[in-house]
Length: 299
Image (cartoon, rainbow, N blue to C red; front, side):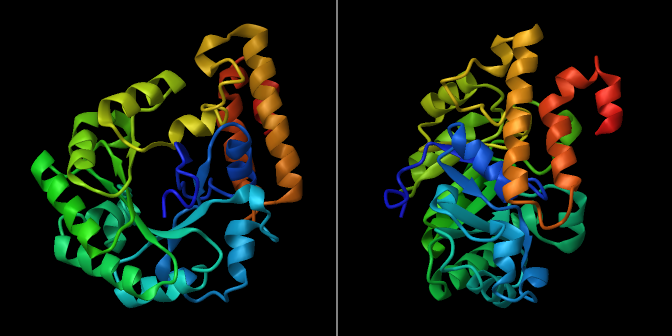
């Protein structure tokens, strides 16, 4: 499976309401060779017609430039996960189970990272998807309390049929406002124990970080989320890094990315309205908006 999709190295993460097609394409143009859809709630998505996927995730016709693509689902019911994923199993390279979301809404709904302590349920969810879907199944997890627990769960998921695993190097208790450094050493232990490809996630702010993480963990690929929001060209070595420029050069770099994104939005407008567009522009331009409050107000 991994070789069939080109053995990607740089991955755009699934981000709620921010992994829409226009942004995925922007990231792909600047170095990402694999992208995920935004997280899709299995119970809600299973109520949609199959054609709705093109509107929600693909934004109309699906050109080859938006491939390979993995659709990510969250949920805690094997039957609903399979039902939802069947709408897209022939339109994506794989379906991913979200076992990494740490937000309170995931806690309330009993999905994402809050399923990690329930190893038996996690295994059943993967087994159902892997045995009943026409496409490969992948999973994204966070670290558990110990290295041993994390490796044990990863092995169970591999045994249940997962063909690729992404490991975020922080626990669910790592609050977003106090992340601290990601623990890449745990990812290294998972990679050493598994036979399937492992994607490292967490603590990637620059391209140099990505290279260090790959070297330290031995992971097959790097996934970025927050850093990509500010710098969709994080993995583009033809451009100077965001942290390597300042002043007019910084403004020119970020405004060019924002302009390119807006051109893509015209072709593939988000199905849920302008909210994601504003959010992306604020992220990409936030270093400039402090000095240009008029532009901030217009956004």
